[in-house]
Amino acid sequence: MSGRRGGYCFEQNALFASALERVGFKVTRLAARVRYRTDRVLPRTHMALRVDLDGVRLLADVGFGADGLLLPVPLDGTESLQFAWTYRVVDEDGAQLLQSRRDERWEDLYAFTHEPQLPVDYEIANHYTSTHPASRFTQILTAQAIAPDVRRILRDRDYVEDRGVSSSTRTIEDDDDLVSFLAQAFSLEFPPGTRFTRERGSS
Image (cartoon, rainbow, N blue to C red; front, side):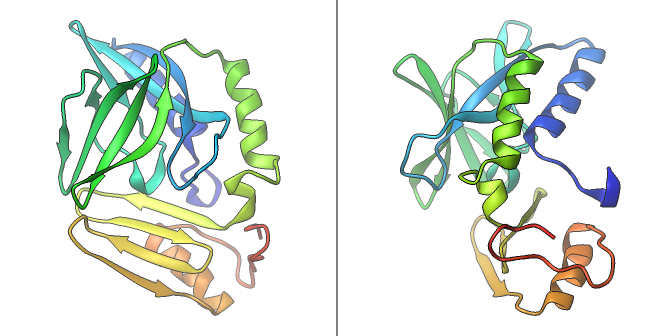
């Protein structure tokens, strides 16, 4: 993509689903309601995937950002240890809920049902996510990248490196430092002199 931007769930999981189907996996595209970092009910604006393999159903998701999965998770409640992070999917009132464990406490990430979604469903969700003033993606600058050993998260000017058992935080105040930092930490390239507003998180 332009400037090496990685995209978000609608792009990443759409591409991943196509790749899985090309090599023979059965994939069902799902819509999820994000629970992470919120105390209110949000619309179903996250794309996730169900993969059926030899009678086993798995949740696969490469688009949830720094708190997301690195490996598929069984849908039967089995805990999935993924390097320094642990996940599970539990049943909840006719839906299923993806959770991650933090400090011996389970944290809700998102809830979903198994109704297959069509491209038009994601078109509406994508429009809301990328344009609505209540959407997180229009409110704050964010860049996120995950690897087996570290999760890198930039929200506004606060940068976190999360290693599961420990984390470090720093604040990037200078605009020029921010542009160079995005290139260094996330391989995101912007023209010299690019500025990001704090109100909307856009250049």
